Image (cartoon, rainbow over all chains, first blue to last red; front, side):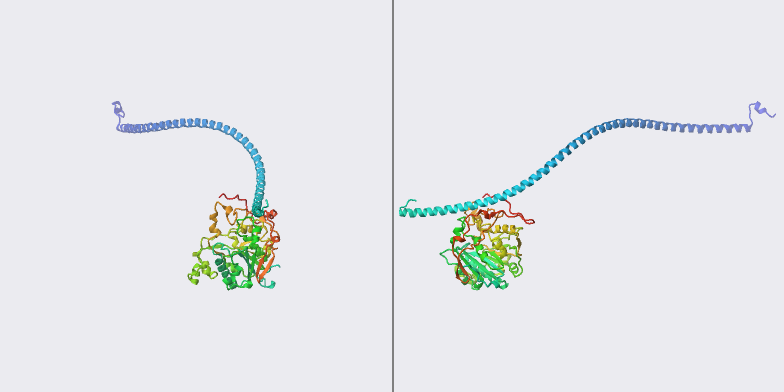
Length: 167
Length: 360
């Protein structure tokens, strides 16, 4: 009569307790798994958001890259243009330098001629002063002599009238 | 007869000759009073400072109808030592014979040349009859202080016309000025009182230090003779001849310096300073001639007979000579070779620049 309860569908108390314990463990494990599942779901949402954000960033980066490439191409184009301009400017500069050298030579020549002209002007002015002074003297002398002559003639005329002599 | 100063023997040559010129013609109104009071002051101060000096006075073409200054001066200035004065009266015919401008009434600088030529002092000061010597000037005139080949100039302080009149009124009461010739006195306090200045003095500007130049030009006699005195070639103007002498001096290598103190001049009617505007617009009528002539721009070479060297001198009395007229003494009417361009010397100022005549 060792196994009659099993025949009757009964289990021994010790088995029941073991099964009960297994069930409690299973329920506990199921609860934990459900909790973990919920956590995983939450994490999944986070990661999904992050992934979406990353995708957005990626798109932006791709757009920026495209814009940078476009800008780079433009810069390259401008660089080429500037190079051409620089070359033109260099040529202009060379031309201006040549002209400047020519002008410098002309300026030195003009300065020398100006200095010579100034010297000539000073000399001319000095001579002019001397001439004007000499003219003053000549004019003064002429006026004095004119006065003396008139006086003399008047006196002679007076004497001539008295004596009847024609002058 | 060659005129000579009676102011001492050759061994007693004066340190300084003061050359003045004038005549009894009421130039500038009451000339005699102004002259005598100035002469009295200067003579007293020169004596007080112990400066061996002589006065050389040239009475140029004196009017025949008036007494000559030589006949008045020693009565008017009793303290004046006759032995320190030499007087040259110049025949009035020289004025006409030398004239290049009939409107000029006085050949001031040829008259001064007459005095410079005959002065005996180691140094010769040409000044005017109404210029008072200042203290600094008197200090500088002391023997041994002046240098050769240096033209000394002095600033002129113009004083109010009334300076000296108060003292005269105090001295003679209400008597007429004509009766008081020579009695008028001026004291240092009159001259040096800033309240008596008629206007701010004009500064002497380098290099020529010109300005009232005729009132004070001091130079050693030998250099004066080397440059042959003032310009006798250009005789059409009286104005600017003194400045022209400075141009000649620099051109001749002389230096021009400020003696260090002023001389004083009392304003009077007829002063150029006061009368210049009266001839605005009719310069040609002015009694000093054309003031715009190029006195700063030309120099001159006088004949060696400058200063009427060959004028026959008659001794009237000790220290009193009459220079009789002779055509031999009269320089040519025109001597264009005597007008020269001043030399420009290294390190010296350039001669004057051309300035066109001012439009009146």
